[in-house]
Amino acid sequence: MSYVELEKANLSNENLKHWVEFFRSGKTLDDAPRYLKKAEEVVAFANLSKEERRMLMAMEKNIAIQESELSSALRKGIKQGVDALAELIMQGVPLEEAVERAKETVETVQPSEDTN
Image 1 (cartoon, one colour):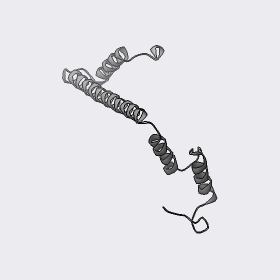
Image 2: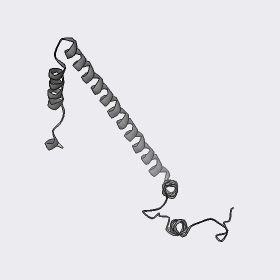
Image 3: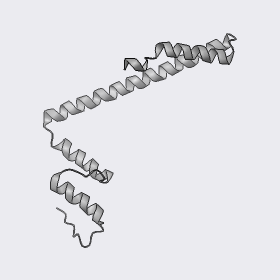
């Protein structure tokens, strides 16, 4: 067990306010330092039941998988777009016209703002 003597510790009133609130309520203030907010997350996770932790970890895994799939799809789409543009240019289509055709293709594939 460790003890901190507050009169010897180099804590500003602002830092002390955040620590006192954290130890008193288990919560951090909005303007608390990032390391204290991280401590709050660790404590909250530790206080979850085994089943809640399992569910949270499964949700985080699913989110990571979805982010990876979206990233892969984006890279694939960009590559296809660049390949299509390069093909048009190699066929002798002027650059400006090739870019316009590419824009039209993107607009037909891209969902409109109204559908969101």
